[in-house]
Image 1: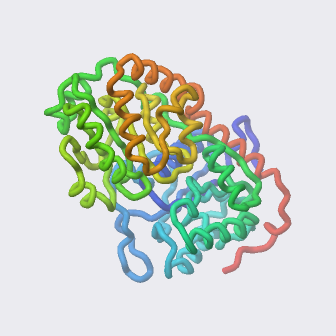
Image 2: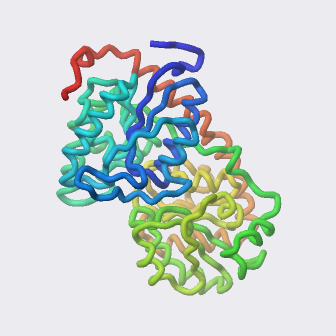
Image 3: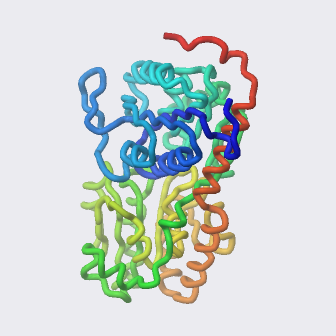
Length: 406
C-alpha cells in the first residue's frame, strides 16, 4: 500500500453516498477535495441528474451547484451513477447489486459509506471483503419510531461487523450508537467547514442590500435566518409555530427560511406574517452574514453543518438539543441557545433573548467565531479522516482474500 507523508497518496477511495444534497453532500465534497489534493484517486458513487434506474424511472435528483455530483466533479473526483433512492424499499436488492458491481469496477483500497441508505446497501454488497468505513451522518433509528426504529437498531447492531470503522461526527452520535447496542470499532471526527469561505463580513448592511429578497429589510431590522432543507428533520414547522411569539415582542422582526425541499408548499401555506421563504441559495454565506441570529430547530442530527457555518461567519446560533449541538456551540452559550426539540416556547424565548440584547448577541457572536476557528476547520477534519483510513488499512482481515460475489 503506498505510504507517503499524508498517508493516502496513491490510494483509491470509493465514496458511496445517498442523499446527494444538503449537509451530507457538503461533507463528502469537502472530503473529496482534500483527498484529491492529497494525491488519492477518488471515485464517488451516487445518484446523478438525468440518469434512469433499471425500471426506467428517472432518479429524483435535482441538478444544482450544491448537489454532490457537481461539487465532487469540480473537486476532481470521478462520478459514477449509483441508482439509489433516499429510503429503503423494494428497490434495495437492485441497489445492493449495483453497489457490488461498482465496487468490482473501481476496486477501491477503501470504501467509505455515507448515511443510512449507502450504509445499508454498501455493507450488504461487500460484507467486509473491502476495508469499509461507515459514516451515519445521524442514525437512521433517530428519524423514525415504533417498529421501524426497532428494526433499524437491529440492523445497525448486525451490520456493524461489516465496517472496519463506524465514523461518527460527534461524541453524542457515538454515545447514541452505543446506547442502541451497536458494538463497533468507533471513531469520532467532528464536522468542519471551510473557514476561507465562511467568514464574517465587515459590512453587514451592504450584504443585506445585495440580497434582492431583503429589499424591504432595513439595516436595523431584527433578522433571523434558518438555512436547511425544507423537510421534517430540520423542524422549520416548529419554528413557524414559535415565530408569532417573537413577532409579538418585536413586530419589526423578520424570519427567512433559506432552502428547498418536500415541505416547501406546506411551510409556505403555514408561514405567518414576517416570514419569507427565499428558496434554495447558490451561496448561503451572504445569508449567514446578513443575519442577526441563525436558527436550526432540527428533530435529529449527527452534527449539523449550518450552525457551524453560521458560527464561522460570526453569527450566534439557536438550535435544538440534538446530537452535536452542545458540542458545536461554545459552552457558555449552550444553556441559553440549545432548547428542547419541539419546544416552541423555549425556541421563541432563546431567539428573543439574543435579538433584544445587542451586547449579549455581540459577545455570543465573538465566542461562536472563536469556537468555529478552533474546533471546526474542514482541513483538520479531513486530516483526521485520513488518519482513520490509515488505521483501517493497517488491520488484517482474512475475509478480504475471498472474491466478491458476482
